[in-house]
Length: 328
Length: 166
Image (cartoon, rainbow over all chains, first blue to last red; front, top):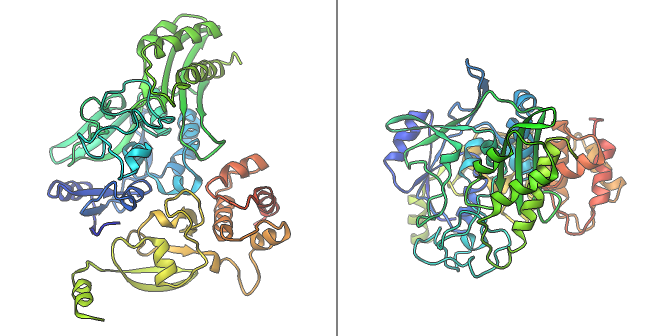
């Protein structure tokens, strides 16, 4: 690790003011991704602001019945919180599909949103990477790209967002609560992460002076029909090749509402609302789910070692939908 | 110490912290980039906790912080100021092996032994969490600890022997 200075913030305002005054500073909470990236010299902040003493560590219902997850609650405490297990089982399942128990005891909800891609070339400072060094080129495009994106890619970057939790948040239509120098703002999860475009160095739309304070889950609970399916190279403790989060409501075999979010396929958790709209009012059948999967994947583009992904993604979507809607 | 080294030391932003490790409180002067793992091994001189990958992928560095298992390689010592830490050196009491230590011996749950301190601390954390009952659940919730000798069936058997009985 490079040398850096370190301070502890005791409140949100204090943390935001401190980071606003230092362009090379970063917040640190669980540190599970940032410290790793610092050891690899991929990130070299001059100053770390430890936010663990800020009281953002509770999970509470808001007056309108939505659930507020504090940014500093650990992934483990979130997944095993009674309100999350009872009302948002998809989120529990997704969190528990990610990382290891030790990492989930450290990693926070805010940090999970902020974690960076595990693209091998992003991590390897001896290879060009547009995300690490804009303009340098993308080594993954013509390299080994088994874990890389097939949707929403750009000529500059084919990295994927690695989170499981965020895929569930996308299916649940969560809102990210942030606070900056100019006050609070609410960012729908759909608008939080970015596609790479010509600025692959930007993972998300959080400003440098903004701190994530919480995640708000809508009142819709989807406790009957949900599934988080994760396909990976080993049975546990691996990033997704493809993951699918499905929530639905059904009436007598007919889909009345459905949302499908995917991980491992794009620079952000991926949703296709046209495909969801097409499924509404239709019976939950293998054929209908396969048709919707084809809609989602019609623009998929592969890069060699990830040529298997569209077929895998289609099967994963169909299986997750079948299991969520109880047709087997 | 020569002059150059001394001047470098003066410029370093040292932090004074306290860590309670295995019920003994230590006051340490650490630089911000010292990981908890390095503080335990190099400053407190408890080498039972192992450095494997140093990237949170192998679990050899697992310790209990305030009762919860974490990877000590991925946190900074300054971030754990005031924490209560248990390492493998602290799990036996009054000269009697911890039940998991005994179970690892009973089931021959290691070959080279390098991952064992992390495995045992992780298993204590797993039992504290109380989420695993079946063999499959133990396997899933021990997945953060790699054993390159491949003693997994015996490790799971050892954890099963103790799980629910502490």
